Image 1 (cartoon, rainbow, N blue to C red):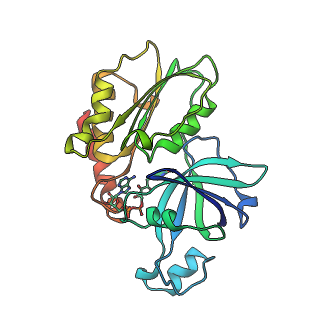
Image 2: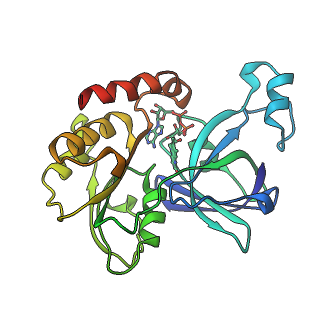
Length: 266
Ligand SMILES: Cc1cc2nc3c(=O)[nH]c(=O)nc-3n(C[C@H](O)[C@H](O)[C@H](O)COP(=O)(O)OP(=O)(O)OC[C@H]3O[C@@H](n4cnc5c(N)ncnc54)[C@H](O)[C@@H]3O)c2cc1C
């Protein structure tokens, strides 16, 4: 499946919104999930194939170093009437493939992708909602807050580089929101879990959405399951990315990392 970039917007110094339409979007089916994601395919510079390509064909015809890089991005918004897909990309310096792509993308450019997948949706039966993450989880958290109706409660803890990196979040729910700001120190990795340790949790059954950097997510998950007694079934929790690793390297070890996370709570 592919679509064309129609707009690019710098939301914050490190967050770029890319709006896509046309291409195959007439056939895009959005699941009932606020963490729906697409698996984008970004070719290397000077790839010897068209910008609209068939993934299977590229894999068959070209050497591996010419294959597109695969990355997952959350559907920040899907406008079914206009067939318009919105993705928000973290641009984390010059490193990586998808971040730099979003930094330089222009209207008319093509994005090839597969999907969508995803499975989290705020449960109307939960007494309250906990949402925790960094910029990579922000699209899913923003989309989730937007569908929470009036009369529901959400406790939201987010980490970013500073006040200029915060985005406005809309919700009809009663939202207890705290932005945490990195200070460029190794202790930044503790910001989210520390904020949770001191947070006063409302009474009742909580449904949690916790995604972001692997080491941070691991500590938070441990805290929620061990110290707070959350039920696994009430948690959507996964490490989206790993500090110091490209996504290719991370995917090689992710399964073992997730298995090791289980030993934290055994
Ligand atoms: C289901 C799912 C949904 C996701 N949704 C989003 C989304 O909506 N928006 C989004 O921006 N990301 C999202 N991510 C995370 C994104 O796929 C990864 O961050 C990815 O590694 C970025 O690719 P890249 O090519 O820019 O960097 P890579 O080539 O993978 O990595 C290069 C370097 O950058 C570092 N790096 C990677 N991501 C970040 C980051 N966020 N902040 C700081 N450093 C980083 C790596 O550790 C590495 O050192 C999602 C991940 C999953 C699994």
